[in-house]
Amino acid sequence: MKIFITGHNGFIGSHMVERLQTDHELTFLQHDLRDHGAVRMQLLNANPDVIVHLAARTEVQDSFYEQITFSEINYVGTVNLIEAAKDLPNLQNFVFASTMEVYGWQPISDTIRDGQEDPANIPAFDEFTQPNPNAPYAVAKYGCEKYLEYASRSYGLPFTAIRQTNSYGRRDNDFFVTEQIITQMLSNPKEINLGYGEPYRNFIYIDDLLDAWQAVIENPDKVKNEIYCIGPDNPIKIKDYVKMIAQKLDWSGDVNWNTKPPRAGEIYLLNSTNAKLTTHTGWTPTVSLDTGVDKTIAIWKDILDAKTRSNSA
Image (cartoon, rainbow, N blue to C red):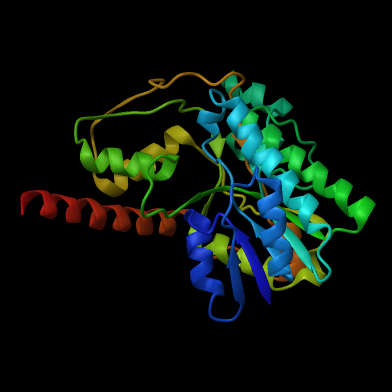
């Protein structure tokens, strides 16, 4: 396949390039997504079979303070790409990285916020769950989904949207929750600073995520014009996640909760199932949360040990 990839330098994109470059012809976006003319010219010249659109600002917390920037890059930039893509003669699929954040507020969120949840009955959102995005990041992503649906109905643009779960296993970024907890504990034996502890989230390890993307990219006829949750259905409260990681690291310091600015309308549950994607492609996640966290701890121990050796040299 000829595959056009945006966001190839990001966490998912850089790993995906390693996966796909042997068997496929890859082209990478070289321009600002908001530059319609330049994006259109490069895309038409590349004439790909599949577009993999990963490029976005993804720091949900920051979107509350940089609303315009997130909207311009994540929504307007995606619209620019779609408008160019609908004129491609050989396009088999436009694969879009959406997010589980589109589910936003759900009735159970208030129950969890008020401490009345039954952990045994935490639901998994699926493709029939009504989205209620509640962050500028999520609103922009949901808008992109609706624009893809419009372009599909009006112009026959084939698309697949993947509502991604929180992913982890990063090697070069400790902004996100799993890596942030691990690196803080490894660097600070006495205390760490975190935000909310009550919300439930589910997590997918990078290897499983890449397998899912590859299943979608290489099987356009099985997945086009569909939206998928990616799961896995493994919700865990952030406070319990912290305890799990602390036990693995034998860390006994104090956690200073609520040390970050509160989000307007914090979402207390994001969890999803991969049943539909598994049915359509045969893909299923294989890395347990326990194993994935062990792998991520090993990654950051090596990184921080290397930094220590370098600083002492």
